[in-house]
Length: 248
Image 1 (cartoon, rainbow, N blue to C red):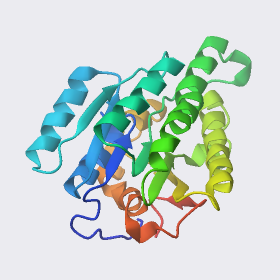
Image 2: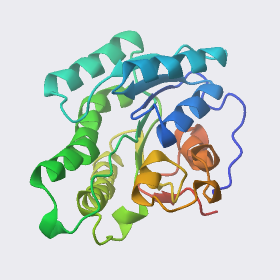
Image 3: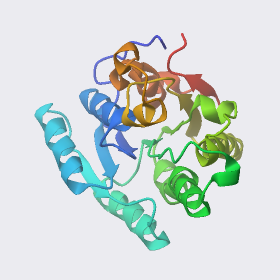
């Protein structure tokens, strides 16, 4: 497991947007960031789940979170622009963006993969992450030091047969991260990295491997050290890299 012990209040004063914050890696990250002092902007599709998480974070006694509901499958350009404008009005900047939201899609051969489903997965897993970066980048550039983390996958670093749009979308995310790193490296204080969480007890993992015993897998909370490290100032020199949550 990635070895990092975060100092108390590591993220105090930072504003961090977490996409797909209502379950799995996103939920664990939102709570971890809030415990370390960040003002967390919670993104998801379901308002009731966002409100539950909002209340849970408030009980931690830290900075007040914010909610930004948005369906990435159907979101328009205007909605992304409105999201960024809303963050600018309320916070004036972003110190971090965790691009986590994604869907699995069916595990089926390319020959039988439905085009509509392919487009749905690519929209949520790739196009939406591009749009989020596109509209939030000016806010990230307002911060003294900002961090973008893309949640990747081993399926994105080595192609998996039958994983269709998911494995292709995650490979594309690795390339999107590299393009952004190369473009921003010498012109901005925004750093860009990817994290492969590895096999983790989550709803997506259960869907992909229904016969697997989730009790034998790390929880999302247990893979958080690398996600915390890359959002804090201890990682200012980390840029354009691939990280693995379950490797030291």
